[in-house]
View 1 (cartoon, rainbow, N blue to C red):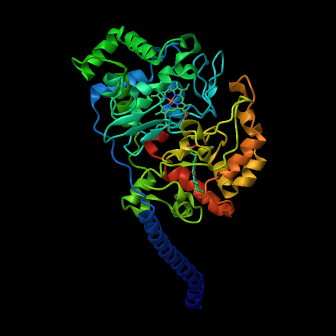
View 2: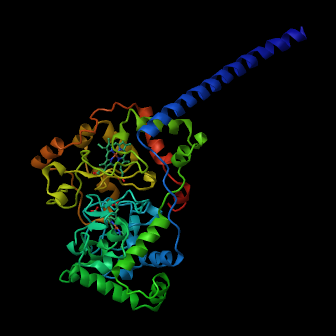
View 3: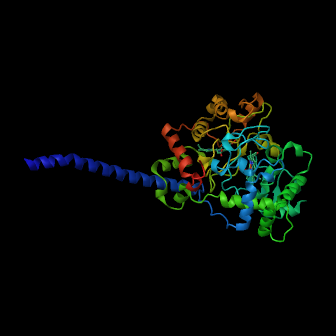
Length: 437
Ligand code: HEC
Ligand code: HEC
């Protein structure tokens, strides 16, 4: 009797353990299939881990680090690079549009004060010093070519193979270094209107003079560039080196996975990666090592501006071609979970909103309202955001929409969740998470 009872009791356990073992076996099999599928897409769209940062040159790094967070390098004396590119806010400022010189406070608490607002969202700085990034700014207005070395920038004296400011250009070795010179002369960002009558070179020379007026900087320059004739190019070079060491990602879950560690991503993250590389068609533009094709695309982003008269038509302003209207550079996506709000005008406050936009772009733009942005950020600015394209712009926006942009993705709620998880978790490096409060 007792024996029978024991067997009887055992049956459900046996059954249960059998059931779970087939389940986990099945899971293993399907996870292996997922890995196999991902492998195909990874090679097809040339996804690869990022490189390790270039070797740190201590003196150059120290100089760049000081300059990056020093308000005195602005003509107005109240704005530093770090004001708008804060490590603890994903190297941006957490705002849709930045507040330049004259603004009060930092980060999410920054108020407009007597300052002007930038026309675009401050992009993150992660990996922007890497060789692939030969164009910078949302419209690519700064450009670098290695062989033969030549820049194309808004200041003609820096441009071409035989630039007029050869002494400055000699110091600059990538797009990031030349880019660093432009916030300094931008009236909204760091220069201020009171210096609008000076030439760019006069502003650069004056900034250098002010910097070198301080003994601590003289020492740092002497160590970083012994016995050289210093100019603003040295400032750009140091700023770029600092950004390279500080803001290069090394080991996100995605990078570990690409290096062969199949355990680096969870099952839902892998499902998200598969949406990214297949059904979601993100790979059409976000491909290669940095998850960008480095091209200009129009993904019909809703309009968002503080200025009724301003219509941002992106790349067209630079190359004057109608076909480039509303195109912006495809951004890289490492650490994208840390860098809200999104898009060139900060119109999307979360990755979920970005994904909703891609799922049905036309529906997204038609139903977009600036209310959410005004609610979240109204306290930072004097004026309210508006989101209406005029009729002509609207027509051109749709006519010019990228052919790579799907208009109906039909992603299920679960697929969208997994995709968001991939963006937020797999692409984020833990080292930077500690910097985000
Ligand atoms: C007032 C805010 C503000 C300040 C100060 C500022 N930036 Fe920016 N930064 C921006 C905005 C806004 C953009 C985007 C402008 C555009 O694309 O038209 C930008 C763009 C950039 C980019 C290009 C990134 C990309 O993806 O193309 C880099 C690099 C950068 N800034 C570095 C710096 C450095 C270095 C300094 C200091 C010398 C600095 N910034 C000062 C707001 C600021
Ligand atoms: C047709 C090309 C294209 C496709 C397809 C595409 N993107 Fe983008 N993506 C862009 C461009 C261009 C931007 C910048 C747009 C802007 O700000 O005006 C962008 C911006 C983003 C941003 C915001 C980044 C930031 O720093 O603001 C995220 C996140 C993103 N894309 C994710 C995705 C995902 C996920 C998919 C697939 C569902 C996808 N993209 C498909 C071109 C594309």
